[in-house]
Image 1 (cartoon, rainbow, N blue to C red):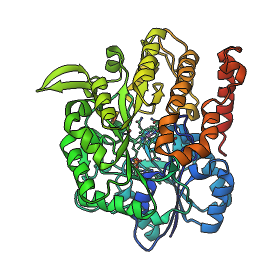
Image 2 (cartoon, helix red, strand yellow; image 1 turned 90 degrees about the vertical axis):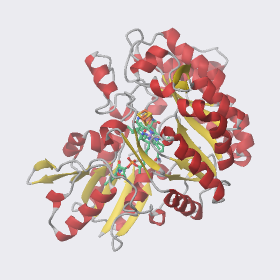
Image 3 (cartoon, helix red, strand yellow; image 1 turned 180 degrees about the horizontal axis):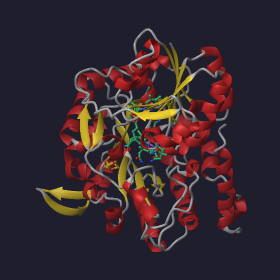
Length: 495
Ligand code: B12
Ligand code: SF4
């Protein structure tokens, strides 16, 4: 069968395609795990976000897929619906399969949008079995993790237990299936690699727990190194390790750094997401090792610097430093110091606009980011389907915006008990632009050719909506913010 797999073109504020065009790891993993006789093509629509309609039309015409698979996050749901309509108009018989976080956690929405199948949770084995059932015309009822339409009704097969990743059952991603090119991070070709799946924490904003429960399973180092080599052989110079929480098992992570060095793969640049507590507690040995292994940017899940907010986010434990088992307070500063001392940049993940936040508490977080992080990655709490946070915001009547295409993390869609949503977003937007500007010299040192060629495009993106008058303070900043919001609305019309 011909199988076409697409990820959505929608991007969010901190990942402008001019600087970041990252492949979706799910699609190549699915492509690597279907039976070998299928023809499979993978297209990440972020690479053509300005010509989505034309590209999807061309791909459907040229590739003539019997099965079309879409990978979707919540803020991409509207675009996914439009792509499904387009594909059906081009080829009415195509079977449409949805997967990823949003279809898994809100399948009912996709039933209404006209999908044929929904793969809930991990997809490799379920999708492989679905293609077999489509070929033979039977056996759908035995496929765990599958939702399907039968005689006008939706049937939901039992959930599939999470995979333990250890027996080689999940094969390497198939990167050769990609039919679009141009994946870059700050000008260098980038790819994604997984070393583990899962997390045992339960932060209230994170979709991971409803998606797969609290667990952690890891691939063997042999497999991880093969995967990194495969990404490198396909041209990657930067690797984003997309594990849910690679620092959950610090000793394994240290051993992985050593394995990367021993395999000579430390000449690549690595980006990773990390918990502050792991870095703070083990930084003395871990941080130098990470630097030697090639880690350059570390996304730190700081979440918030105030204890009350951390408790709401259920992120206090993962942000607490410990010594010999006893609590030594917030881990953030310690973690930042270790990373910076070892020449790594800190991407500071903060969440502002939680239910009890006041202007002062938001300003305190922004001031912290200004002072301590290299690149701000500040978001607003977003009530994604079935997260504990979503329940809380709904119960307290704090959700002010139900337009899911704006659930991109940098649009405030909830208010606090003290501040309207618009004001929260304005505070963040106003402060964050200047923090990003400040990182430009460091980025120039790291990637001089890219920055020299793209600085004006990046600045135009960061300061869109602003004019010289607004930057000089001769115009009310809110007017620039309104223009920015209008531009953002336009940008969201991908199709
Ligand atoms: C790595 C990562 C990123 C990376 C890389 C993204 C990329 N291009 O791949 C970066 C940092 C760029 C990123 C950004 C964002 N992310 Co992100 N990210 C993740 C993370 C940590 C891992 C995702 C991953 O690659 N896993 C590995 C792959 C193999 O697994 P998978 O994607 O789950 O896919 C499996 C199944 O879902 C299924 N499947 C998936 N698609 C399909 C399609 C078909 C057809 C089928 C059959 C099956 C299937 O099969 C796959 C294999 O088993 C998750 C989860 C987490 N713990 O936080 C969040 C997560 C996916 N991100 C999320 C969000 C919201 C975002 C942002 C909007 C904002 C943010 N929080 O940073 C941006 C938007 C990005 C953009 N397009 O602009 C949310 C999504 C929530 C939701 N309900 O939609 C998650 C779940 C985190 C959370 N908050 O809970 N992200
Ligand atoms: S530690 Fe990270 S992956 Fe784990 S639940 Fe919290 S946000 Fe999600």
